[in-house]
Amino acid sequence: MSKMDSEDWDRLSSDPDLLEQDLQDEEEYNYTSNSSSKLQFRKVTSVARWSSSVGMSEVVERKGQLWTTTGIVRSGKLYCSIEETLFFMEIGALLLLSENDQSVSLETMYQQLTEEKDGCCWELYEVYRHLKSLGYIVGRHDIPWSLKSVKRNTGTVSSEGTSESLEVHSARDCNSITERFVKMDLNELKLVFDVYFPNGKFRKSSPGEPSYVLCLIRGQPPSKIEIEILERQCGDIPLKFCLVEHGRVSFYSFSKVELPVLP
Amino acid sequence: MGPRWKGKGAEARALADPMSEIVSRLKSSLIESNAHGLLSGCSVLLAAEAVQSDLLNRACFGRPVVTAEKDEQWFQLSMEEAFYLCFTLKCLSIHGGDNCRKTDEELWKYMTEKKSTFPEFFKAYAHLRMKNWVVRSGSQYGVEYVAYRHHPSLVHSEYAVLISTEGDGGENGRLRVWSDVHCTVRLCGSVAKALLVLYIGKCGKGDTSPSCVTLYSVEERVVARWSPKDCREDQSDRP
Image (cartoon, rainbow over all chains, first blue to last red; front, side, top):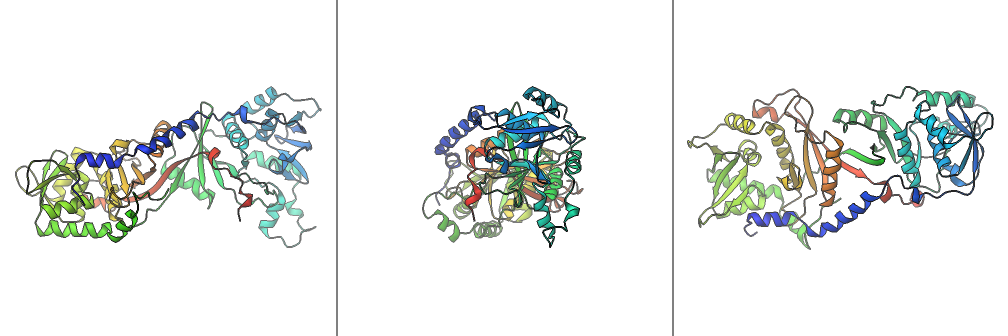
């Protein structure tokens, strides 16, 4: 190998053809997360009724395919979280009614979100909307899409009659779901969403494992210990941190690796 | 992101010439010649004859100092490189201005006084070198080091390396705020490198003597940004 002078070192360390990569990167950074121009406004409208006792809406008229990847099923009924409700209202795919069948405005629901009583907050909603607009399937972490999938996991032998214990009254079950988020400590790091890649064959009765689990983070980047604690809660599923700043959503992973010992 | 070899045959050449063997030959050569370096500021100067010079270049230790001298090639080693050769590989002795050989403890004290983060920086350097990765300064990318699978003439560096220490003073101060994460990840991406963070745990061992360092823990993590827009092909067709 020939002698290397200091200029050689500099030359070898840089790479002019990577400038192109940088330009593509530039494009990506100009893409805003609030891509309203890319949202498809729906022509077909479903109808749901908000239930303040459970902090969810019950879908009373389902239209279109979107329900295969949205909402949770309990006792044969379909319930949507506030973020799901808001998202479909925003794109005009959902008409929301109050308990006395009055039409509920978007403004009212934004106000509802501000109160942060239904397990969500504005930033979490931005994350939900960002991913949902891109076609991802997003559910609240650890909330089964349908109790049929839970049955399957617990290995109940008989499929009919004996699984009374798992068939929870819908209102009670919904309550316990939102209870987990009632005291939303904004500084506490916790897993919020399970994310699945866009999938035309997604089934709530057997969704499989999510592709990622998300943790909303504010303030500072996570410390090593915080990452480890959260990873333990995720099991084998990759963890991503989502950060919302000025309406822009970013996702970062801090994945453990093991560089190989080279020959 | 796998290794990006430079040109045809580069990977084969690297395989045929393992870095561990190059370093081993360098070690033998330095021991045989009773090599000693001169401690000056934050560098160690080393005069090497032709064969040693070649080995230093191939193993990527030091930067050549251009002089008119014909018989010797002078090299300038960083504190990490010098200490690695001296303390870990035990093939180089280092002398002060008075031409007295410095002990490991004296060197350690000197180097930690020059740079308070030297203990963790050295641990990170040694950790990668012991796995036979080539480690060079990463200052042109705003990181501590860049790591290569073999000689930089054969392969592009895959990792930009940052060091993180938790608490207990001596903190490196990187990635403490999100703007630094955004900035560093983006920069690394634009030069096709993954951001590797080495979390150094001092395990309460302190840093008063070089032997403490052998007891530090190192955890490797890659920090990457996920762009949901870029990778959402329908997964339903996958087996």
